[in-house]
Amino acid sequence: MALEHAILVSLLEKPGSGYELARRFERSIGYFWTATHQQIYRVLKRMESDGWIDVRDIPQQGRPDKKEYSVAGPGREALAAWLHAPIEPESVRHDLAVKIRGAAFDDPAALIREVERHRQAHTDRLAHYLSGEVRDFTGPEARAAADPDGPPDPERELQHVVLRGGIAYERMMIAWLDDVLTTLARFGAPGS
Amino acid sequence: MALEHAILVSLLEKPGSGYELARRFERSIGYFWTATHQQIYRVLKRMESDGWIDVRDIPQQGRPDKKEYSVAGPGREALAAWLHAPIEPESVRHDLAVKIRGAAFDDPAALIREVERHRQAHTDRLAHYLSGEVRDFTGPEARAAADPDGPPDPERELQHVVLRGGIAYERMMIAWLDDVLTTLARFGAPGS
DNA sequence: CCTTGCTATGCAACTCGTTGCATAGCAAGA
DNA sequence: TCTTGCTATGCAACGAGTTGCATAGCAAGG
Image (cartoon, rainbow over all chains, first blue to last red; front, top):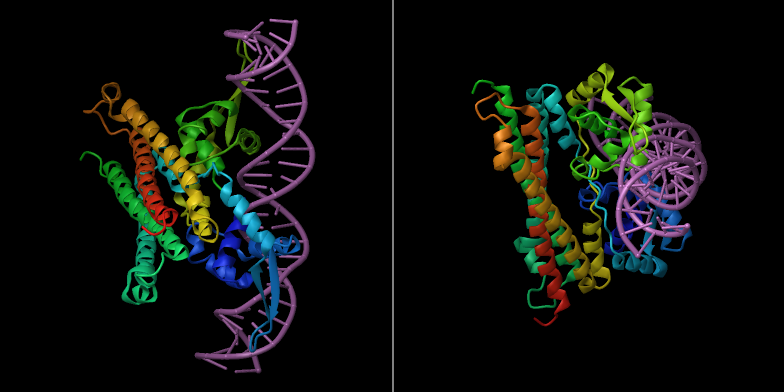
């Protein structure tokens, strides 16, 4: 399991509280790894008692105190060990694909709305990714922040390549959902 | 949760035993929904006691008896209800993306082997899909079995569009993994 | 004033998924 | 003969993920 490792990576990129992590998991990291705040708090507690991360109590004004977590030595080692171990499974769960095959035994045309909704969601996410890419990586400000003559920045470039993966995924999904819609339309309008 | 629905769809496509289902989940259906035999047996038992599926004991010679399951009325209704309900989440777990971002804090070059292994796995799966497509959908035998002048066959065409989705996914992954390898190579050979 | 909503953390109960193990008959090969 | 491997089903224990709920201070708006 790798929620712990996703948290370690996120904390290495920037230390933060459980709450902040939960919000990151709704945004950037959440695009390839989902987690609720309950899971995060539970795992943080375990990681702390295992010595993987350090805590610092930070009093705040006008809002509750927070606990800022940062990665400790053993956490870095655990991450390194995981990085060097091969992973195989990549288990997949595509509800929509199950639905599409199931539609053959029900009313295929009834799925059109649903597929269109998913297409819209992927279109929105693609737009979100693309604006994030411009803001953080390819826009004028981002380019100014990055020194083109300096050494390559692995953290930045690896974040970018992961984002490009998200963009490629959304584009593929949109194209495929169009294919699905075309196929469904053939049964919705019989006699064509 | 939708393992039950995936099983219903599979049993509608063809009745079978828990063991047979487990093998289908290693092949066709397993490409977009994974499940082990334990899960399948457990869910089958629950579905049977809920009246969603019927069982028939089939004695076999030279091997243990098997229980052949088929979808009953309530199961069909449950599937229909699920098909008509919208689904949202599509929760994602891309271990490899976590690893890639994590590699910034370790040795990026050490990931090259791992990424190449994944690329190979996706290449193999793509080849598998493509040969299945020729065999079942676009090859001469498949075309002969399907009557081009007859009415469209939803079951067949929807299976095909799902398979095309798998093909598009694998192609996208291979292209992205090439992008990842190019990016990683920049850190592996510094001073380029 | 009261409600809504945000930051911030957490418990408890439940379901789902994974792993290891067990049984049992038969076939094929060393 | 002994081991390996396939069909076929299942239990038990554990770990991961989900859902509902609780607390608590502060800010903003009606």
